[in-house]
Length: 447
Image: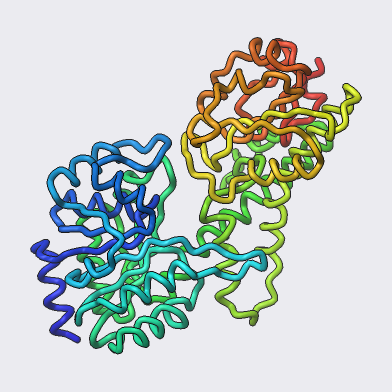
């Protein structure tokens, strides 16, 4: 063991090691590019032929605003530092492999590890002795011990900790800030032994410019799931406070501002729902780690609140349409924003999708528009033709800058529902629109 790790550490320092990256999505692709850019030879494995083709042509397959990524991909591909493939045999000579695949949950909040299991199985068939395998995907506490280690040992016939080594280093990135986050966010380097964690710190120091904290596997798994569960709980409080403000006729944004003047208080923003690959899922991964031994109350309650926010938007729409005697089933509604995050094309767990399903089940005619998501990139004003209302679900800059007078002219009925508080209420009313928003009491517009 000591020989393998010492040799691996020396080769990392000299960049004389091939690095494999399994999964070339929002995490794996920028990581692969950054490693190639500092001098490692990187082989990326993915299952999507179109993505592989684009990457090998130096084309960025990710839509949305990702500062620096397109240029970085072009540069590292041109210099031969990164090659994308679907063939796991190309990882046979890799001394270190990162796994960056999706780890979703099912309808019962149980982890669905098909992609993780498939990656581990295929990798185990080709790894050489001494390979360090690091899972960067977010996983439930105990997954390395219960899923990853036994699977790789069984398929490879090798023993973990002696013939290959395991680490967990959960990513901390957000679409729109991928490269910046990878450089500037601290990482927990969880190794199956302190020696493995030390090698991981040496490796990540090539691209991470801040804290790298060595830890064990379970601590690394817990840290990432806990930090996102923490944020989810705090968002849920903000959302409930916003609903209270709305019901009593106050403005959540003003209340939030004043509460946050008190030392140690930091009420987050409320809104139309929580999306993305992390926050809607990771609290359930954290909960799953207890294996049913803890009677959980706060985490499930927060998830229920945040999942209910698209329904709250629906209720606002229903109330607005009633003033014009229009039932939901006879309405046509435009939803502005399909991604879960502003200036991004990432639609994973999008609250807009939940709202769309609620509206369709109520027989409404729905138009989806998003400047970054292929298939929905119609001009935002053109999308309003024949619509009774528009609902802003994502804080894209284009919606912040929209001509409200033109919005009023295009709509059949003057209804705007602001799920992200990107529209100034007074400006909306001055343009002749009826303004509704999460956390906004209607009497706030009455002088």
